Image (cartoon, rainbow, N blue to C red; front, side):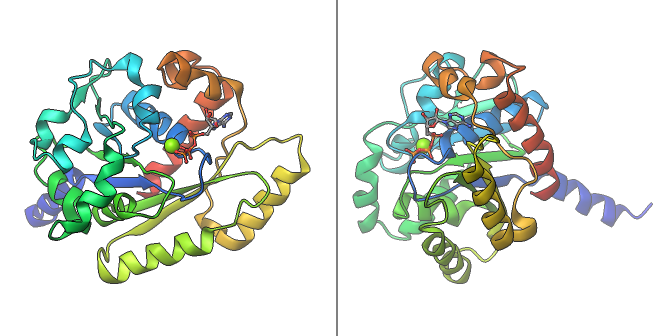
Length: 267
Ligand SMILES: Nc1ncnc2c1ncn2[C@@H]1O[C@H](COP(=O)(O)OP(=O)(O)OP(=O)(O)O)[C@@H](O)[C@H]1O
Ligand SMILES: [Mg+2]
């Protein structure tokens, strides 16, 4: 037995993987995917931390039924110097913790500007987490501002959700360019975990056309799993629950379970 190899494998096995869901386009399924990916990981007994990094706080609302909120949010850690370990909320799942967001986070885009190493604030905070998570999933706001840059600086990989709609590819050039700039100047280890088609409707030619176009452009980066348009995915957040707890057999819940299987092989 070569113990140095074993040791290296152990370290690799314990390294946290940080995944950001990014697309500056609004309403493409970033939050729905962040919440349901995190919960599917936890269901597979993978230690997961979900961070709501969007001032709209939709992920926080969408999972509110599972968490005992401690009243503090990512904003407290990022701007008010609260220890990040104190803003973590446990959930009903032993394997899932959540850091919530609040509307004040909108101010962070401006407040961060005057802070030294402003792009690295989140990364620095995450390095001080006491509990060792296997995955950290970050739900980003629909912009490429400083919050998203902080998420990218801290991440190992990005997942790009694309809605199967008109103008689906609009703005992707700008997004890919931002990722390239971050790779070059801020975080050379950042990779693209994959591109995810969301709200796919198999009855519509448009969905098929968008899927073909995205596949042609991204090739193997496109996840084989497609998230279908599913009413349950839209309804679940209003009950503060992920799809897996709202209706485990729904297409939406099942789609996210398959996606996570695929994702775990990539990141
Ligand atoms: N597969 C789906 N089927 C049906 N409805 C969906 C699906 N995915 C997302 N939705 C609904 O579409 C809306 C937008 O989704 P979501 O909030 O996840 O997008 P987002 O990219 O996070 O938006 P924002 O840019 O505002 O943060 C929500 O009302 C959500 O419930
Ligand atoms: Mg969102």
